[in-house]
Image 1 (cartoon, rainbow, N blue to C red):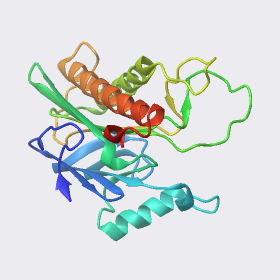
Image 2: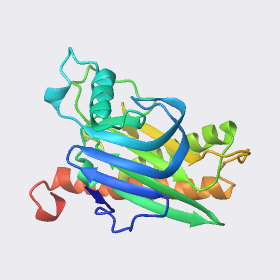
Image 3: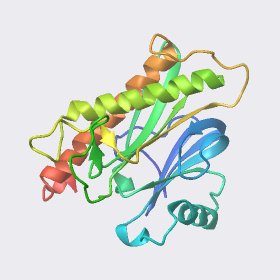
Amino acid sequence: MRAVDDATGLPAADGLRVECDGDWLGVAFAAPRRCLSWAVHRPGLVQAGRVAWLQVRDADLGPEVDPAALLARRLQARGWGDAVGLLTACDVAGHRRARVTHAGVSADCVLTLGLGNGVRVGELPAAARAWRPGTINLVCQVSVPLALPALLEALSIATAARTAGVLALGWSDDPAGAPVSGTGTDCCVIACPDTAPGATYAGLHTAVGQALGAAVLQATRAAGHAWLARTLCPLTPSNR
């Protein structure tokens, strides 16, 4: 196991350790954090010491398999049952990380990205499409505590930054179609110190919103360009 940033060259930050071990990617906090998400395992507003990704394959998720139950069992077996849990078909070793500090507030984002399941928000499909694996999962830790309204606002900014980063790639699997804006199974997790009182606002006019948005956008762009390089030039050694 390595505390890392192999993908970006960033050293392990104070209070945040990234662990990549086979099919697992973990982001371990120095102390339990207040987390808000719609994750597969432990969604909603929870306290957690770690966010964990499990890399799965088509054979792992047959029609008879409950993905949430599968993830819960695997997390328990690893001793990470209290983690916020995510599922991905991406190679977790290809995660990307970005850290931004602005006006004394820092935001640290770890992200995995695959666009095989890419869709454009608001666009109704003309015909049924076969399901394909691919998702964008991210966690962004901010250095300041946030009240619940600010956590919700921060989650919306992370989602917007992810969408902006994907749109900037200009990618579509339909040559005649508009660029995708995300996938059908994306998930964002926001984490902050679990102390009160927390900041009431986290909008784009605040230091936390600006740092968070920049970190998520940078990580999305880096992961997106790497995915495009692997997808369009799969035999290039540097893209493997």
